[in-house]
Amino acid sequence: MTRRRPLTFWRRRPREMGLNVALREIALSALPAALTVGLLALATQPAYQALIHNGTGWAPYAYQGLTQDVQAYQVAELTPGLGADERREFRDRALSSARNPSQFTQLREIEGYGEARLSLIERYLLQGTPDASALAAREAVALSAQASQYAKAMEGRYVAALLLMRRVLLGTALVTGLLSVTSALRALLLWRSEMDRRARREARQREALSLASHELRRPLQSLLLASDLLRHAETQEQRTHLLALIEDGAAQLASRADLTRLNDLYLDVTLRPRAQDLRPLLERFAAPRVELSLPLEPLVWPVDGDRLRQIVENLVENALKYTDGPVEVALREVRGQPEVTVRDHGSGLSDTLHGQVFLPYDQGPRGLRGGQGLGLPLVRRYARAHGGDVTLAAAPGGGLQATVRLGQPAGTRAETQAAGGAELLQARSDAG
Image (spheres, rainbow, N blue to C red):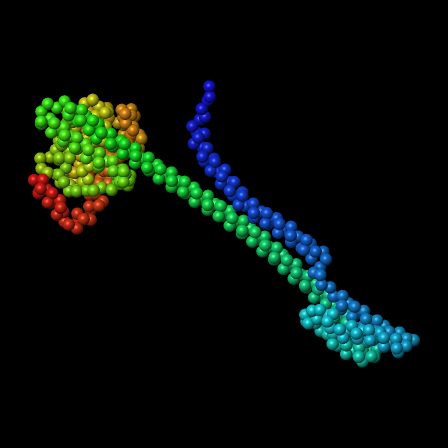
């Protein structure tokens, strides 16, 4: 025998799947960034190591060679027994080096590091004396030292530039990776938001259809019963009465089954209020087990008659299903506003359940016989749309009493105040 998996598994599975999808997408988005960082690090490493170990690639060899040539000439001037032609040969070699400025790259920058100048070396060499050769040698040594300082400075600049380039490239890779991850997260959030929005929309549609099915049941039952009785009606008066019931049931079906207004009818309730006497709306509930208590004078109030009828229908139906005794329906005016009460003589409810039964699909401690727990939530929704509310309380002497207090429907408050109640007064006059 196959064992069923626990229900919690199916509840957790979509959440776990969503988390796995998110982690997978984040990992895939971060992969290009990681590869870019790794490749850039590998690409810049050889150049970095070359600069560290081998310098910048620029060396002061030309300046060092000039120093050697000038010093060789100085030595020749100080060497006794050396002929004039040989001394002139050493001097010409040093002059040839000094008169070739193209080999002394970065000469202007190097001369900026001190007072030594290539032109002074050439001038001293042209004098051709031992003292001038000594001055030329000292100037060449100083210029070579300035070239070495420049080489070290250039090495530092190159290393700093490479490090900056490396940081910029790695930073760019990280930013690119973060943007990729952010884009993936945004896409996931949009996807999740769309899924939640779709789920909410589907839930609202299911709720509207469930409420419509719940509210269509009573008119359909009335139609079936009236049509069955019509077949056996013996007098014209009976047939006329049954035909009136059928017309009323058909009107209620049309009022509650408009598929283009399901949201307005059951979710985001939109009323069509009209000032009218409330007594005729409640007179239709008179039955062998339902006792009516209505005021003698007209009680006119702006209401949506079809929705108010559904309010009272649900309350009376619940009272009849919960109890076997009489149900009392009363209409009165309290502090200038209408109040409808529906009382039964059953066992009642505990105080802790008075608010719970207004939650959708909650059927109370015993459950409504054949019900879905949708009637009382719809009653509260309609009552609040009328600017009022519905409450449950223990009735004096036992049983449960539901009280519906009606206020001004949202669509009529401003109009009623602006018109000074003229429409209500006219309705009261018509009802009288």
